[in-house]
Structure formats: C-alpha cells, structure tokens
Image 1 (cartoon, helix red, strand yellow):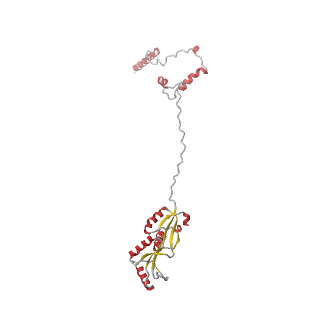
Image 2 (tube, rainbow, N blue to C red; image 1 turned 30 degrees about the horizontal axis):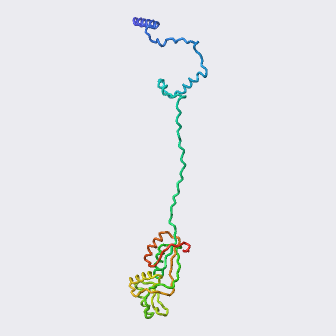
Image 3 (cartoon, rainbow, N blue to C red; image 1 turned 90 degrees about the horizontal axis):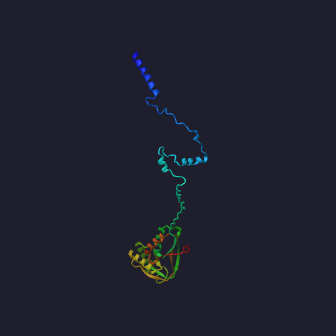
Length: 264
C-alpha cells in the first residue's frame, strides 16, 4: 500500500515537470500570445470616407448566405449601373356596358267585323261568338236591305195546312220558321230564313234538304229585311284565326279588319 502511494506521487511530479516545459504540445495554440498593435498606424475615418463602405454594405441582400463571398459578389446588383425595370402597364378597367333591354313584342290588338247574318246563320254565328267569351268586346249592328234572298216553302192552301207543315219540319229539327199571313200570292207560305247573299241562302237550303225538308226552295225577296253584323273590339290575332276557320261554315259571310273607332 505504501509502495502504491509513492508510485502515484512520483507520477504526478513527473507530469508537472513536463507541463512546465511544454513537452507534450497541447494547449500551444490556446496560450499563443497576440501580436502587438501598432498604435501609430491606427487612424479614424470621417463620415465622407465611410459612406462608400456603408453603401456597399447596404447593397448586399440581407438574406445572403454567410461563407460564400465570391458568389455573393457576382450575384449582387450594382445600384448605380442596374438597368431600370420596365414599368408594369396596368390596363384601365373597361367601362361597363349596359345591357340592351329586350323588347318583347306582344300581339297587337285588332278590331273586326263579321257579317252579314240572318235567319239560322245568325243563330249559329251567335253560338260561335259566345264560345269565345268576348264579353264587352263584342257588339252588333243591323243593316236594312230592300232586296235579298229567302229560303221558303211555297204557299199552302190554308192556315191549317200551313200549321201541319210546320209540325212536320219541326219534327225534322227546323227551329226557325214564319208563316206569311199577308194577303197576296205568298199567303200561307212558310219562310225559313232571309239572306243578303244567294250563296248563304243556298248553303242553308242544302242543310234543310239534308234534314229531309224537300219542299224548301230559294227565291228573291223584294221586301225590306234586316241582317246583323258582329263587331269585335280590341281582340287578339288568335281570335281572327279562329273566326277565319269557322267562316267556311257560313257561306256569303265576310270577316274583315276595320279601324277600332268603327266598332264602338
């Protein structure tokens, strides 16, 4: 035990001596003395001389990586010689274009006259117009005539014979009739309808023959009689189309456009 103590003591003494002489060489750089400063060579710079250095310092980007001075010098732009950037042309906003209003053209209202009607044609035309539900847009006027055409059954012997004939034609579906009571060659004749145009009279006669009224015929009538013209005020074009299609069933009738002032 005592021998170990003296061995350790001797080792420490030797180690201390070696460190005093610097024999091992570590710590040489750490304890190297700094070079002496030459105070006579030191001088202060004024503000004008330090400005270029500050300008150079400001021209270096703040985010430039440390440790690459050569690359930084090549990429850093020189403030005095850098080309001016082209100004960005900002297009002025185009003036707002106002939308052109779309004008929806509505069907213009028109005024019509449809006629002339008498007898059974007058009744059928009334039914056609009633189905259109025109209300106060529909009116009528009458026209006097001194001459026309009538469909009739020639005079019978007496009133009793005329009454029997009326019963027969009523059974066949005839609703419009009139027994002539005036004295003369046409007394006890049975009038079935009076018409302005011969075509209209012929059309009605054909209908009577189809029902079985074989004795009816057409003749001119010199006495005064009236026909009816229907007037339609401010109706649409579709009404005209419908009446034109229906007008084929009314021989001699005419549908025409007229100034609206005439329909009131």
